[in-house]
Structure formats: structure tokens, C-alpha cells
Image 1 (cartoon, one colour):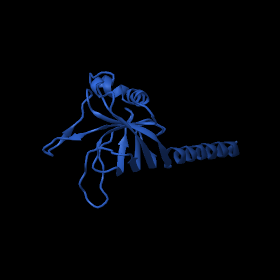
Image 2 (image 1 turned 180 degrees about the horizontal axis):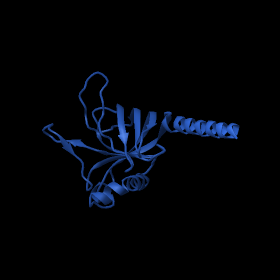
Image 3 (image 1 turned 90 degrees about the horizontal axis):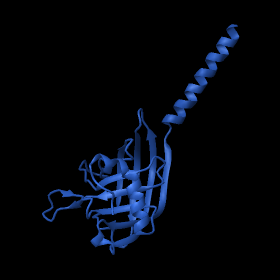
Image 4 (image 1 turned 90 degrees about the vertical axis):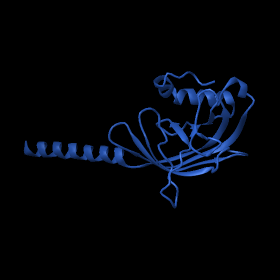
Length: 181
């Protein structure tokens, strides 16, 4: 009887350790795909550009429904309309598909906000609502009416809009916004 109790306890401990290792062991993220940069709004339908999107790093699960991602996001295109096309990031993704909280520079403690990143839980789709700087250089904003977007995987504006609307569904619903067009 004691032997069965001991074996049962050992089995439970082994299962717990295996679950903890699975849950907290970092997962490698490597999204390297074609993306599409576009501007929202019917008057901007002609604006769009293909680019390559690379998201590489490690994803760490946290208690609750959060994932911590440490890695790099890189865009390769003709003109990214951003001052830099590669960012080292350390971000926390919550249950609403993921919001880019900050971008950390390599050598400074200054943080530059690029925009809001929405990415699915398996890191296979992403969209960035890019914050564009005001002309005077003080701050910036993004608009659901004519804002700049980057989505992947997508080869056309229609595919990019489908990715954005899918990933941003909770965000758009919670902000009394609308479907992106």
C-alpha cells in the first residue's frame, strides 16, 4: 500500500515538473514572411507597399494569460516611413492579442513608441498600427480613419486588412471604433 502511495506521489510530482517546464520554458519565435504597408481610408486605396517582415526572439509564458516576448522586429522594404526599420523589443503581450508597450534602444534608457503591435498567440500573424510623429516633433498619433498600418503575412491590401481586422477585433470593439477599411 505504501509503495502504491509513493509511486502515485512520484507520478504527480513528475507530471507537475513536466507541466512547469513546458509552461515556463521559452519558445523560439521566427516569423519571416511577406508583409504589406498601407494607409487606411478609401481615399488611400492606391497607397501600399510590399515589404519583408522578420520577428525573431523568444516567447516566455507568464502566469495568467500573458506572454513576454524578447527579440527583434525588422522590416525590409523600399521606404518604411519609419526612422528605423529594426527594433530590439521587450514587450508583454496580453489576452487582447498583444500591445507593443515600449521599444528599448540598445545603448540608452530612452524609449521610442513605434505604435501598437497586435500579434496572435502563435506568432504567425501580426499588424502594427504605426504612430506617426507630428510635424513639430512633439508626440504623435494613429487614426483608424487614415492611419499607417503594417500587416503580415499579406501580399495585398485586402489580405493586410483581413489580418488587421482579425487581430484588432477586441481592440476595435472596446474602443467603440469600426472595421478598418
